Image (cartoon, rainbow, N blue to C red; front, side, top):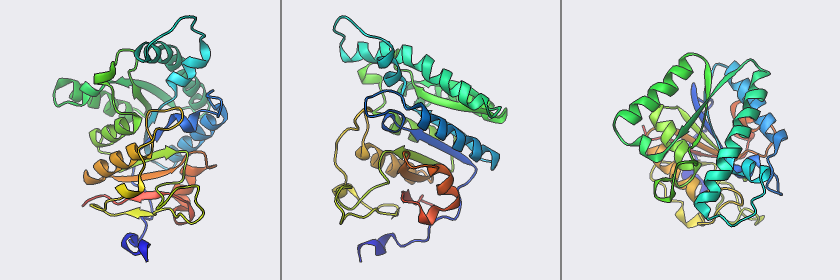
Length: 270
């Protein structure tokens, strides 16, 4: 059987520091507007995780989508100008919403806007890690996003999948959760009834034949990006889970009913 190669036992629980990446396709509705109901549900679940003693770092997309719906531009903008303008407007709205939602649980949040150059060895790397460390030590939830207002094409991350993987490694997380709008990696097209989710991926296992290089509807990423990030983070000794952020209570179910919850886990290298 095909799945025999992935027949390792599922982890019974996650460890204490978790990076959760929420993509634009999870946070937006079909019309491109922010889905505040789903955003609120994710906040509820993160609050639950924190009550169980888990440290959480949230990498959240959605700023550009927020800004695009806030402003009508009367003249043409190139792609960089659009990202700069809409993210500048949208990031304020996005973090404001997170602030209000987490405040209901008495959770303090802090914004971390970063760029690719901050992950090069040196003072900027150390400063960013120190900032996020002191936030966690003081029970503040970091909310991370790319600083689109000053990033230009050659300095941008591929997408927030790449960013979340770098954050997970920088902060020595135990688990990275990539929330997408499908249940995981399939051995065929997800819409094909004969396709199955690949539940576990062992180190060194090549799934590239099952991954198509196509972008998500509202974000820059896609399953190819998630697979690339997951493989790199797995090699760093961090467990990676790809799951469906549109499923109700997905984060809680991954904790309490992992065997019954559709997802793909990348088993970390020892």
